[in-house]
Image (cartoon, rainbow, N blue to C red; front, side, top):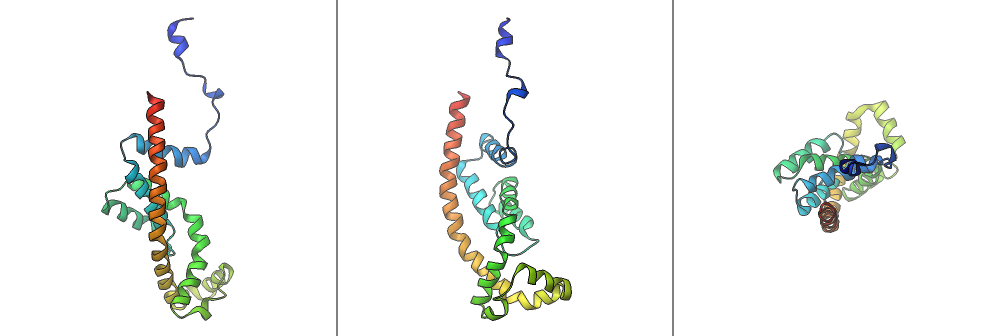
Length: 177
């Protein structure tokens, strides 16, 4: 056997398949760490991306996350990734945010029994304008609740992710040596 043959990597078939989560989330974040993005900046980027992704308003998350990333000189791609990974949770939290917002804005009785089905029925029969007229104060209150809840969430995520990303970066440095 020639010396060069002993250094060949194993065939691709013998490697275990990587999961979707690994390929689409973990690997891109790891690549950012490898290219020189600091763990602190990446932690802030992901934390803010999560917060923007949970905003109880549709249609603005992409633009808002790009604007925040550009303004704070953070990685736009990482922020977009974190923001869009929150889509399911944004939908799941919309009704609770609207209910809480209506309560603090004094419209709790109008929105107390709001469900996804009733919201869909309202949109189908009366259109978005009717929904806007009915829910604008609830939406404003929901944004206030969101803003109040996201400050501690971003702080907690920042400190946790900063430690995680530092460890990942240190582990990668050991592996590469």
